Image (cartoon, rainbow, N blue to C red; front, side, top):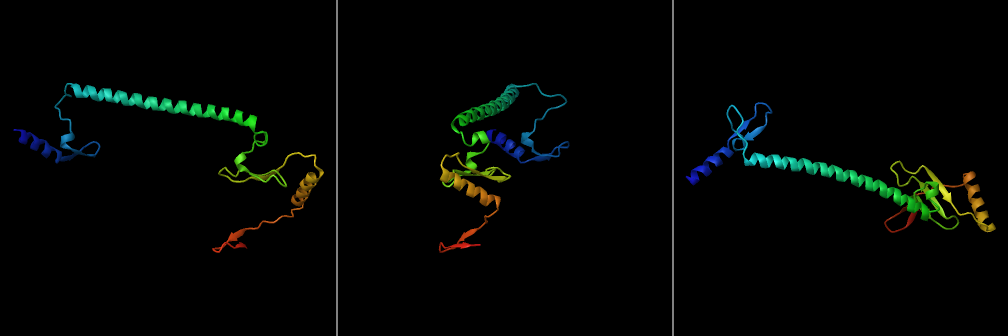
Length: 169
């Protein structure tokens, strides 16, 4: 008898059909067979309903978690901006990204490639230097300004070959 029952279910698993409504393929063993009216709910139906409720609750909790995480991210960014404002007297007040800056210190403090870390790229180059009382340093600043005003600068691309030699392109 035991073998016959196992064989019966094994055969059902190998019989397939096509749903007339959805046109999906199904196994006979996966079907819920009933006559004119739906069968009386049993313990498995109760478990399935409870599992559905738990899944919906888990989905709502995940949505709420994501909302809270986003609020925390925004709050963290605001707090970080306040801290940065206190410790960064150079870039933050000018709305510049410190990651866009290259430190030189001499003859000027920074060259800022504004927008370098954004997708749209560099939109301006800023020569950023401290105010100075030194006559010599101020002369250097003025000479840099003159070179830029008169457009006395060049763009040179260098290439390093296999032997490590630098060549102009």
